[in-house]
Figure: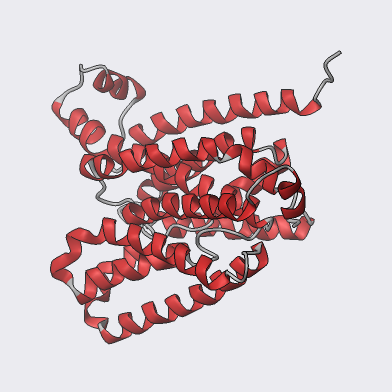
Length: 333
């Protein structure tokens, strides 16, 4: 007789609730802004019967930005979930171990040191994040790589890159204004061009993350147990870390240094549905998409004529929530 899993119903209910919220945020993002639209106007526009103003607002401004927010949020949440699992550490996150900082460092150089190369910021940020992850892995290597060594190496490299970034910003202080919003994370001005730029890479990353589910579950058991099951631990760990860097690098390349998504979202769903990556990974993707899209809509519409960078609003939401988890003792290794 098949054993009943009490978490099955909880997983299903959670998936349904998050999916419904995602749809609601989608329409909320399309209707909300400096020029509010009704749900009927948005629906008519999406079905090809809108007027010129609605077409401009919905199809050319809000829709591509919202879809980019979905992709960025999903990529950051998956990246955080993968890193937390493979490191067996709740603080493992692209921003904490320096992957995002590497992407930001290259973007800063291209923007304020070589402004004529500013058009290469997306690809440069991606390569910076990916290269930083590879550097962290190489520094942590000592006849193998332990999760603790990777985290410690990442924190050290993160501090070094942050110092280098600050130094460049001081040396070129007259050009800093052009990168402040990018440093805090922003989706302002994002269009169909940016969506076309990142979606093929996002698709590749999402597909590869599906193949990482089994390895992530096995690595949660510990290195010794994984080896007993016939897994090449170092190879699988390297693949998962590079995949997390790949997803984070793509997100950073278009949205800047958005933090807390990969740290908070996996925590929330672990508390609800547990550690099984068959459910944790897709729900983290949906939750990350939901959080970034909702925060970006709020950042551009809740403060009057001022558009706040979405990274600031996410930090205002994420930091207190993480402190709440710590206070409740729910963040455990």
